[in-house]
Image (cartoon, rainbow, N blue to C red; front, side, top):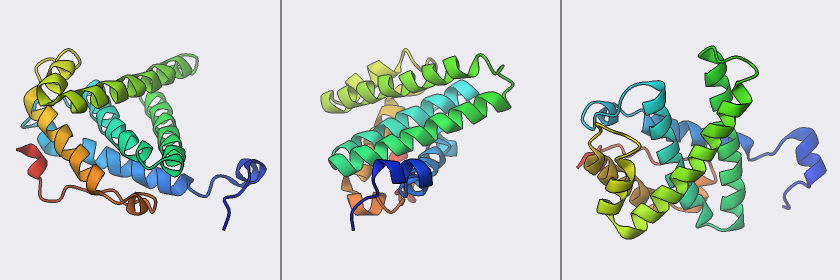
Length: 179
């Protein structure tokens, strides 16, 4: 069956939006894993949590983009879920209504910067990824974080697109991404 047209999506919403929200929730769950904050020393602050979310979201974006047009469309919807979440979080933190759009825009730009950083770092190797992460996350075990991101990227690459398209994201249940 064909996808609904633009007008139908505008009036009734995109049928893939709930799937994108589910994927985004999976990314946040992975980004909130305790070992990132304990063993790798990522600060458990809004800024540290933001970095973990956008780095993991960048990995998902890379994987979805590799699936072609359907993946790109799903990545767009996942990124929209991220923007809505950033807006909600900033309002919860008491950011003034006039400042929220600017800060959300900065958060979205940060996502695309991390997408480029992660792509380049993964292509050039863990040492390059580690050096790219160091200025973003001072005091963090960036070597361990680079290994973690590399492991997450490998799991995502092995995950069939149809599984992601159903909103299923691997959870790395065995914790081996820490090594």
